[in-house]
Image (cartoon, rainbow, N blue to C red; front, side, top):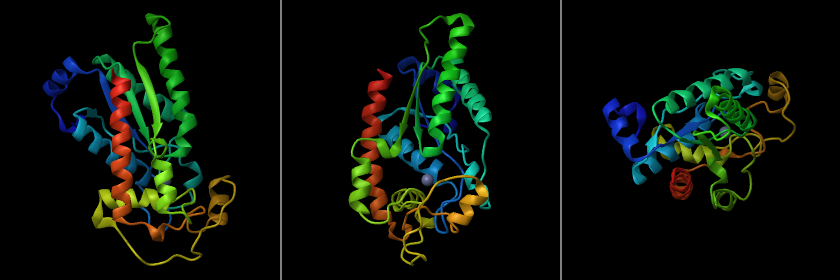
Length: 247
Ligand SMILES: [Zn+2]
């Protein structure tokens, strides 16, 4: 069940049985020469929608622009300032809370978002406390990175023992190809095969160090089949964790 494909009476009915909603959250940023700009938003979205359909819970619209400042030297990347993202997440959460939601599970697809999401949670809870609701916030948020779901990291390393890397990884690109097979560009090779590694500094420095955008990865190994394996394992993890969180 997806919020943006539902009517308000359907949401009202849902709220009579559950106060929990899942929001996929990611980023719109370059993912190397073969990866989609939406990769970090699409991965949690693909996993969430499938989990929501299988288990019958509500999935909200994807918060699809995040902390991508260091990718800004590549065309198409869009970024939010941390303060903007915190304010927007708080507005999303307070809107949902106004309707009676008490649990928001944020499934994240971008490592660079983690610090800001955590700060947004603090801002949300702070707002609740100072609004007079006291020290026991009726709204609770939970953050999970999709690759940290039980067994998922291990599966990714098993599928891609060499060249998983840390940005534009074959795993995340496989997930997007599974979700959107028309965008798959299987085969081919990249030069160098495994991208360089190094520190992430400012946007222009990033492009000098990592000219095609990848870090340590060989996404030419990506495949729809690998994506399907990763998604089915992640879906199981989300369903189990969301149910516990919602209870
Ligand atoms: Zn990514």
